[in-house]
Length: 118
Image 1: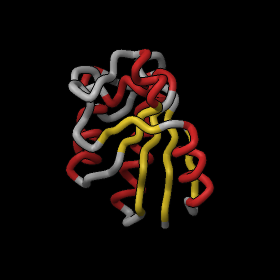
Image 2: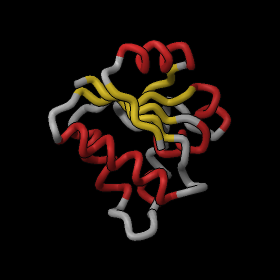
Image 3: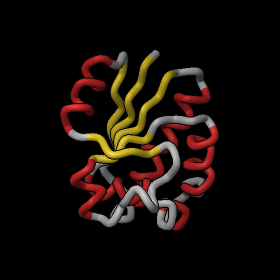
């Protein structure tokens, strides 16, 4: 099944951010084709100098979740405007992350079998 996981929380709400990324990790482990969409403050998760410092309440460390997604080569789409506004640049971006725009997100969300939002 093709799944898009949309995450809008980041350093502002570490628990919700972790829940979204954890859902993506679990979906990938269950064999689904996953793409992560980071918008708003969630764009900070794509910064390789920030993601490992995000820790949700009673949640597993974001570091392990993100690194599992990277190892599985899960695409991480970063809202370009959101990322640039939060100093997420190609130089500090995670290796499977790239800028995308709202048109890309909408097209994938409409083509996906499921969309999960956090």
